[in-house]
Image 1 (cartoon, rainbow, N blue to C red):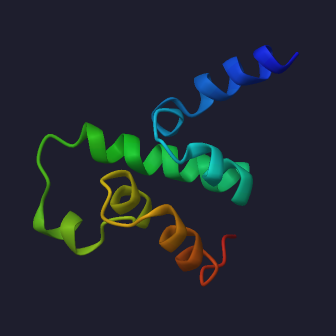
Image 2 (image 1 turned 135 degrees about the horizontal axis):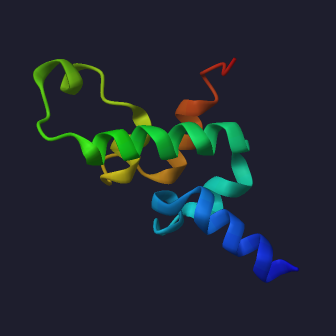
Length: 84
């Protein structure tokens, strides 16, 4: 049963699963937040060009993915946000 669950997680969050601290993130945020992060990082990786306007509003998840923000800081920053 556990193996099937791991396969489902790997399919759902392909990018996040490759991140070193994904298990920590998975334990501390909701699946909705993981979905959002996966989508934001995927959009970032799909950009053919990073524009000035994008750089002015880089999602925190992308900063985390690129190593500009560590996991502890990401989780602390997220406590200040309200997700609807």
